[in-house]
Image (cartoon, rainbow, N blue to C red; front, side, top):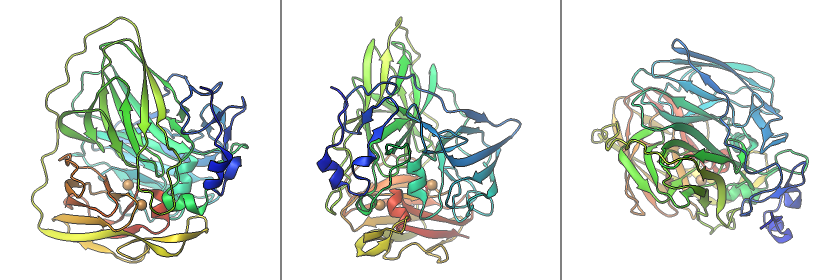
Length: 486
Ligand code: C2O
Ligand code: CU
Ligand code: CU
């Protein structure tokens, strides 16, 4: 099947960008997220690339990141945003006990900042501080101390300036942040698969997004892995690979499966599971990570697919993708080998002590004109406990050293991924009966009209930070609250 353009009707349904929002490259290829073709010329089928890696030496990683338009994306020179000209930006690799020193320079036309999503580090001062504002032309020096007892794992970084987060992530600003060390696994390859989505206009700029897409949470028509369109992952029969899957999409939930294979999940959100867990499908909310081991047992071509996921469609929005989206192709050939078996148990963290206090909070949508990140009138309001985000208001004050049990409810018709900075939580129960993973994670989907119950140890860092919906259009529209641990 050849690539098909989005129909006029569908372009109208999504309004705003309209038909101009198709991605048309120099070779004239057109792609849509719902297409199942192998892609146009110069697009699909390149070997999976590794973003540039910057690795800590002697306890320190000092890097300069410049956020600017003009990144290479899907094999084309575009006006998409990148760090140091690259989307995703460089992979930052640190070890427990290291210092991460980042000088971030803003060459965008709006304020930005940096969040180290998943790191259990101080949110204060020039640490992982979401209240920092870096104006266009300015630089800021972050100094992030990774505790010596920080678990090794897969995390990521992205901008977090309220009101511009969705546009900047959708624009291309994201990168992986790995904490190395810990137990070596019997794998031949260790690969990053950072998934992002965006929509490019014909002139190579990122297409503007209108109020209906912001209300539902925008989904891009191009779904990319490490900035590539449907790359190829080479493998040999019998050999095992570790894949670090990161959902870096602005709003899209990735329900991932690999044709003809079971994924052995070993970690979620940078924390090991107690033992490898076989998955036919893995649901990753925006912000979630999963480390999986892939061990093909025969030669062939197998597609890594994101299946459609219903985030709720009651409020006039609809997912931009209605069919399965091919992400990448596993190409297995060469002589067969036998990989050593995965260990039966993994270094999981023990479950947190029982809670000493309870608290509840809720994601709510209501009628009423809020303003979106670009100043567009929003037909709905997005709040936490009925209040839109105010950085100067203290919403939750928690006593340092305690373990709390939180009930997060969702009164609306759309699923909202709950995310808390700095202090990962263990899911205890969910209204839809999902079996909890039993280990710390930092993003969890709260079903429409449902709830999740979380246990959160506030035993590491003190300071002020935020929790929010990780559909970043919702966060930018006000679905975020402050938390102070002291
Ligand atoms: Cu991925 Cu508040 O962040
Ligand atoms: Cu975060
Ligand atoms: Cu939301």
